[in-house]
View 1 (tube, rainbow, N blue to C red):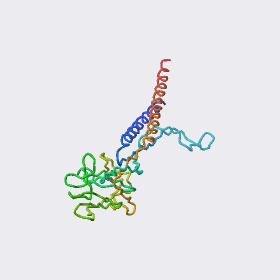
View 2: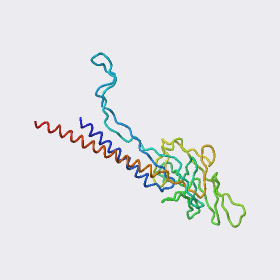
View 3: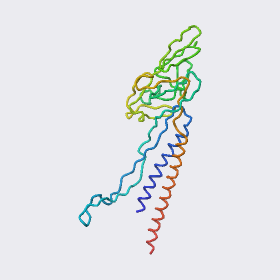
View 4: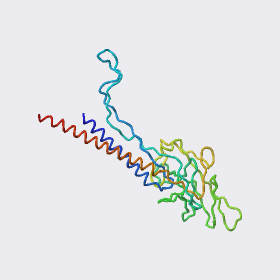
Length: 269
């Protein structure tokens, strides 16, 4: 009956509405450093089995196919895309990008995870105490903590994450810290909380700690930031496809409504 079509089309509209929300967020963050785009995965709903496949027919033979009618679609999950974003030169000595796998770790609010959050954004700055913090709205401290002396005239960060400070008093630079990276068995299981931050979850597994350039960890590059990996062209194409699918589901509802109207009018005769 057309009632099933109404229900299926309604689930389609709901799922596509979620997809539009995700695409809109991807497009909104095309200039967000370290941002990782998401995609929506769909799955079909339970089927009405009106006739089982393989049922014996009047000739005593098994039917080669059955009659199954689907009841719609739903969003199964949203999946993060961890493709490398384009390195963007900035010239700032405290801007760092990760080339390859890994995350920086910063402090988070006590009620968020285990007190740590992870980010691909490397736009660091010094707070009033000379401690490196992430340059978002809250400015969480980098972990392990790095203190920059007051009399520093320049900072150099090597590809292996070693932080060297130059002063007028010393000819040779002083080692003031070391950047560490963290990785996860399943980074797609991380929970996004905004502010370019992600939290560990049971799905991601515990963090694996290491140094830039070691094992599977990437290296770091000073005076660059990793740009968003959200591709505006891809997102706009996906937006058009989602919009057309939304329109087709709306037309399905109209067709089902007209069918039910015809059935209702039959009662008058």
